[in-house]
Image 1 (cartoon, rainbow, N blue to C red):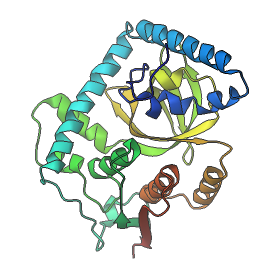
Image 2: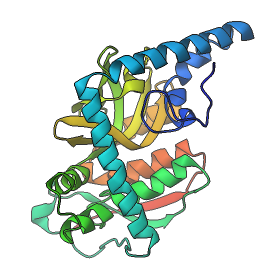
Image 3: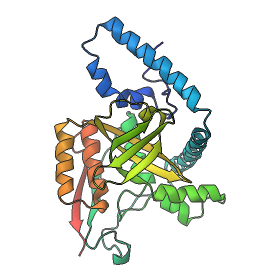
Image 4: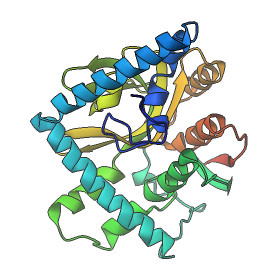
Length: 284
C-alpha cells in the first residue's frame, strides 16, 4: 500500500505527504531510480509499513503526546490569526524611518524592506510563505499578527499567552540535520550561520537515514517542546545555489537580514525568480 502524495503524511506532522517526508526522502529516492519498477514499489511499500508501525509505537510515548498537544494548540492559534487577517483586521507595515538603538540586535544592522511581493496561493509553499511573513516577525521594522495579539491581550488563558511569546521568539533559519534519534522521534538541527543547535520533535525527520540536505524552516520552542512550523524548504547539499547562498551570507552574517535570506530561498525553491524583491539599507 503506497502513501498518496496528497494524503496526510504518516509521520504525524499534519502536512500532505508531498510536502513532508516525500521531500525529506528525495535524496534516498534518487538513489533508487536505477532499480527496476517492481523493486522500487516493494521498497516504497516496506517504508510505508515500517513508518506506520514506528508512528504507532512513538504515539504511546509521553513526550510525543505532549508534542501533539503543543501542535494542536499551535494550530488553533494559527487558525485565529488567519481569520483575523482574512477578516481585514490586520495590515502589515514596514517602518522605514527609525528603529530604536536599544532594540537593535547589533550596532548597525541591515534593515530589510519589502518593495514587492507575490505568493502563489495555488501552492502550499506560496500559502505558507505568505502567512509566515504576516504571522511571525519577518523583519525588525515590520509588525506582525503575533505582536498584535500580544499587545491587544487577545487571550486570557496563560498557556496561549505563553505560546504567543514562543511564536514571537521563534527562529527562522537554514539548518542541517546533525543527529537523529529514530526510536524517540527527535532530530538535532544545527543552524548553518550561527551553529546554534535545536533538539526538535519530528517523527518524519528523525526517521530519515540520509541527511545530505539543508532544511529552511521555523523552530518554535514551548515549555521544552521544540518543533518545526510552517515553512519547509529542502535543498540538497550538492546544490550549487545553496552552496553559493551559504558562502555569500557567511561573509557578513547579520541576524536582522533574515527576510533577505528568506526571499532568496523562497524564490529559488518556488522556481519564480524575483517573486519577492527586497532592498537593504543601513540605519544611520
